[in-house]
Image 1 (cartoon, rainbow, N blue to C red):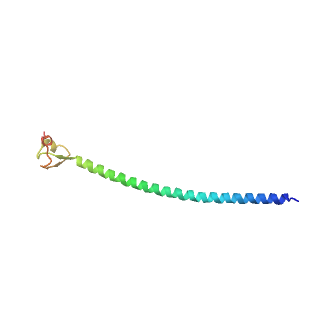
Image 2: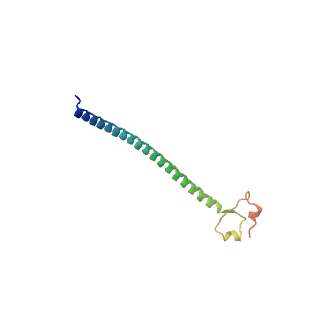
Length: 103
């Protein structure tokens, strides 16, 4: 004779085992996903550090450019140049007629 209670218990046990396996697979998948997320976060931190370094270098270059743009090649004792806040640099090689004509 068919034991319905035994079949029912076996089916319930099988379902429980399948649920446990599914949960175990879900847990393994969650662990893999967490590991990948951590890996991506690590790469993102590296990219952020590189971006910060590039921004700092860019700022330094901009500061140097601003400083170099204050240099003017003029003839000595130029009244117009003395009134500006520019740094006077004398260089016979780089003086052009347009720049050399002061005031």
